[in-house]
Length: 360
Image (tube, rainbow, N blue to C red):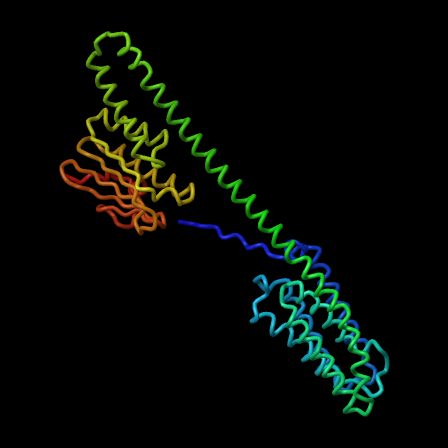
């Protein structure tokens, strides 16, 4: 059985954070950060440490796009929030005193940019912890270098404004995003239900059409009062068996299987079909594969009994076919699609190129 599990939508899809445009903006953001970090190098003690700070911020920014979960789980939110003060600590202690220019505090704006998206991803407390950590580290640096505690607070405090806006933006957008996603999910489920109902109706229509074409001539003869000939009586028995197959055989019956069952009965084979529901939850290819194996078994049978049963859902064995004539032969189709038989446990009946009935 194969089941497709689509990627779960979240607020990133509403805001377009997983679109090619978002990835392009991320690349431009990375280029801008790297340019500022490496170009504003006047008086920098060790540019390699500054580069490490840039890598930390870019990694945290990338996690805003790729990290799963909504709201963002703490195992992703905590490292992302910690990256901002950590990168600030690495970069700020490499700065000269006084700073050569304001571009050298690029890490404050860069950290604030992705922390704003951390709010949108549903982790505002972690975002606030990250930006407050930046402020504390800046204040500690300016105090330690003799510039005064308030100097560091002053040039880093400004990042609270965009974070405050992002927090309110997230409080408005996230409930709307969840409503949109819920409506989208309802539309998808409704479309799937309608498609399933349409498919079931088509199957019913096909069965009614087959029954009508087979039974109507016989019913007209019976209604006329004329006695049935031996051939017509045999045809009645075949039609009755086909009707029973449609009722009990479920989705294992299609036009080819029905024709093979009819031909087998005309050869004197007793055919018993029973659908336990296991084919209802498998994909179309596996369902058709089971029908092919059943049709092959019916074609091979020349006498005796063919009993085919579809097991209930969740079983390791999907279908079991038992041929009884001079002996017994069991054919089983596993849920993985592998076919095993008493003749050859590893080969398909069709691939074996041999009669599946017992020899002798």
